[in-house]
Length: 163
Image 1 (cartoon, rainbow, N blue to C red):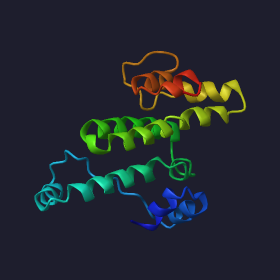
Image 2: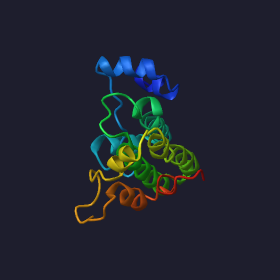
Image 3: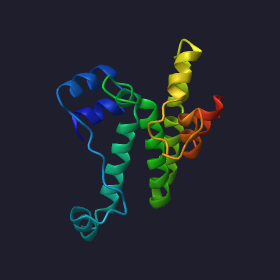
Image 4: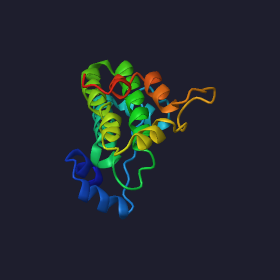
């Protein structure tokens, strides 16, 4: 575990900011179904449980608000929606820890709604929801970010209500 990972797990914004300014990053783990040479070697050694825990830890770090809401995170709403989708995939593949991924996904799904709640005007909300980044190219609706949230099964973002 790296220093930035520990800071993310503790949700320490100041330390995460400092470490990111020093060039520290969180390297996403390979998926369980990855067929790269390193992952095949780990599977042969029987290190599936260690790999599973590393993946889960990396996802917890990537999903922490201290990581997502830092200056330099280009689009925390898009990032949280995409991470939510990745967590769904992890749930499907890693049944042994699916419940942990679900808890993480539910927590993460609140981030877009919380960020929208911080907007001080309807114009700010509209600007965010009209952002086409991350939407499919054939999306022609007036609020593509809302469509993306629907496509990614982010009910909290689309309803604005607590689950």
